[in-house]
Length: 580
Image: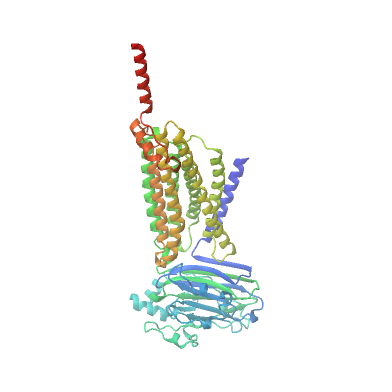
């Protein structure tokens, strides 16, 4: 019965992964139904020069649209790094930021574009604030870029307009969000405006400084794009193009609704850098990084297996669990690299590699904490069986670690704007911290056990050498947790957007160093502190050296050769009695 339940649970998990893997893409589709949130974090993406952001709002249903002028719209916030304070974070009342954007000062710390719906004139008004985005090109969605923009690209890259069009739009047209033109909608609706030529649309007139277009730019900067209406919903579509070096950065797209009434919204987004490459600027090196680290782990796994076969008389079961962990880490990194590769090429992952990655990631995460807990509890090294405390710890930690990995998978396959995204992200962080704290307890228990054994056991030197090793392992685990959970996060939010891949690099590097040192310290062989039988001199040396390291043994004094002195005294008394 239990086997059938496990099989049913595994099949259910595979179905979830199959559905979830479709969501992990750089072609986002966010659906909000009866959502009353004032601020929705839609997407975050790093753009290099010639990067494009295509946005298609296909269904926007809002009650009393005529009464909600300047209260519904989008903001595109640009920053240098993930941790840089944006205008939204500094604003006192972000719920009505669309109504108060006229007071935004023009300075280097502000780089935000406001998109505000005007349901009376059926337009999406564009208001650029900040020097680095004042010439950001925004125009209605079309299959091809305007020729004036392609001419600017042609001057930079050389060649013809047709060549520039192929370079800029090397991706398939299917990558663009599906957008209904007015001819495809109900032509009898008098509220649907005629198709707007983006090259003839009105220029920005509210701020004269924004009309100062550089000499290399001939395309006019539009101050609005058309909005269409069909029965009870509105829709629009536009594209953002980063033409200049100053427009490179990490862009955050937010949806705003200043009122508390629920709305329905469907928005499709395609993000791509030049190539095309659908990975964010800071994620482009990740496929190569993951594949390289997978090769390093593969070589290490082969060496570890050969080493175990050469010392098979000293091998414990934990050594094979360590080998299995390295194999799973190798496969996880390889599948992750392939997953990112297909996202970079097509904008969507290949479902097979995505599912394989999540399966190996989930199994590897649980096995990692299991290995640390088993080594920390002294299983197979210090004691042959697990105590009741150890069993209770495993029953608690392993399910929690599985829950943390499931939460990570859900957040990784969900859209940022979904209501449950922030909840599962908080669950992942909280549970992961609890697991990291829990696995330190078996190491502490083992240290206390060895401290007691060092004062009572006849083989004190062996216990003391194990005690020293467990102290080193405890320090190693603490450093690993601290670095991968705190330092790596701080690194991610502080480095420039183009170097955000460094957090993954240092995470994988720290993990490999942790694996290497742990395998070296607990390797099988005659030179392992667990297996070495010290001589009397080594026993004396280890006792003197280690006893002084524990607080409760500092006052103890060791007597040298006490047994030998007692034996000699008895022999002398016996010989004297015989002579008498």
